[in-house]
Image 1: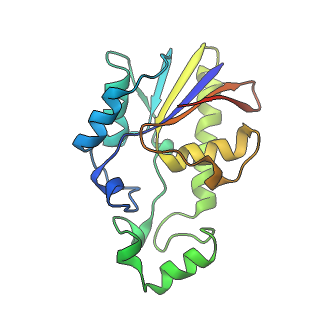
Image 2: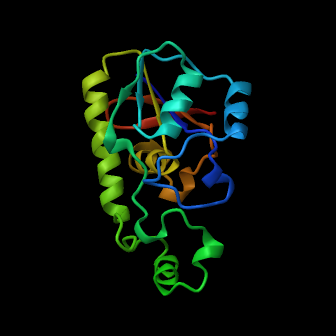
Length: 186
């Protein structure tokens, strides 16, 4: 089965390098324009995070296609860091501890990276089990969601941050039931 992972288009928060997880912000004009210039592979089944930025991206890329939403595909809950960027968090002791941990500590009043990754990979497993008989399955989700799934299943192996992709970009993979083999980067 072909699995396509697409990160949502640009938002104002992305342009400002903010931690945008639970904030339900829409795409910005630049993000919409960028998506309209690109081409994406068609899919039989379209699965999406329920956040506005993902739904708008899916509607632009796959017009007239039914969208299945799954809340477990949402971005990580950044807690006290939500809506803030590096400059705004500079000097914050909690932020420095999180940076020093290599991003391994839970976000203060937010989600732990481990819980987030387990939530995303469990959703992926459930969805491919349900829709895996189809020829192709597209996921329009968040960067962290893609990184979580690919870190666990993609071949060749990379760490979480090694799977970062820009807004509107992603990966085309072949799923063999236990591994995702990358065939193309979008």
